[in-house]
Image 1 (tube, rainbow, N blue to C red):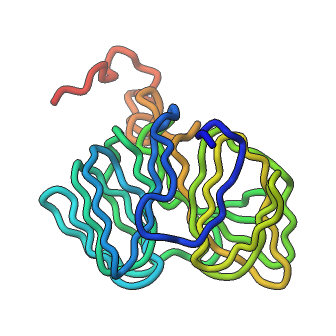
Image 2: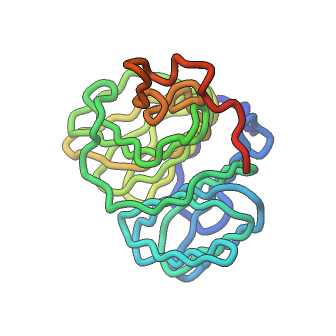
Length: 240
């Protein structure tokens, strides 16, 4: 099976490499980690992840972070080591994101999604097109419309119970289950008498600020005119 195959993987969270999408347009590797099996990754990129159980110690290059259960992170560097907890990371190779640790997550999303589901953008793209990390909430009694995504999705069920319908059949979704969706995989999530909460990684977006439009620029006013409309004063190059 290749990364271009329209399929989905539903499996128990396991330490180590769970899926390799290095040969896609947005190269990503998905890893699990556990308290008795630390994870090491020695590649340049950004780890987007979630700590499901325990307290994780995450060493990135010369920095150390402590991340509690129920919290999420985005950490960039060239050498990663995770120990002491259970969770997952989606490692976006060659991308340098912003370092961020947040949480604990809410139980319900802040944004309306589809078919009664809700979403929170936990880690937003610094620039339009960059990766993002989301929380999804499914109330009881959801029957999602079958749909696809143009790029991979990788996520972990935190709590509750549901199902994932794919072209290959229906799989149970329980706490500790990972779902890994290949590009263009037809799927739909459903719940019956329980709600369900999960986090999910997107390797790219069509959303976010641009050099031509972002809050600082838009809300800088010169003689009543936003700086985004004044080419003569807009920065053309970021100097380091």
